[in-house]
Length: 227
Image 1 (cartoon, rainbow, N blue to C red):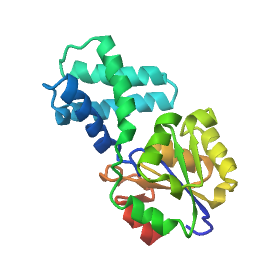
Image 2: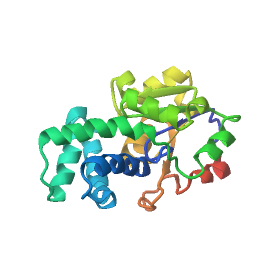
Image 3: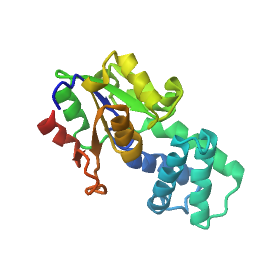
């Protein structure tokens, strides 16, 4: 990792624990309106569906409105739970409203950022929606660690497209050979960055991609041994 001056982090599933915060948001919604739904059972179904929808969104196969609707409709259908489109739209609205109120981070996130801040310029590149991501960053105490925050709405393209990396590096005023990307998505974060010409580290908490031949960590605190 020689010559690295700037580190770019993904947000969701990398620093900000999307799954834990989703549970808290759905808990609030279900407790008030759908008390018969077990949130943990719902999340087991919702999490892979949400990931699949995000993959389609990243390559412009669906719009963000379709993303927000489809992930819920498919989850409730998989549960064989009868629910109207109006109810799904209300849940979708409330979920986006409540989600940033939660601030669960991955273990070691703040410790690692404290360690890296004196040594590197830190940035975020996220495919998430600007307003929601801004709330997450501010509410979870992450804002002060990052010099720039690039989202796909600003760049006009989503990871893994080269345009968003180019935009982020231009905003940070750094050359790609001096930049490192760290994220959980093997295609959007890691291969997208590598194809663009950056170095990259995959945050693979569950050890899914052990055979991919990529520079991989399973815990954020491992970064202290690398950087």
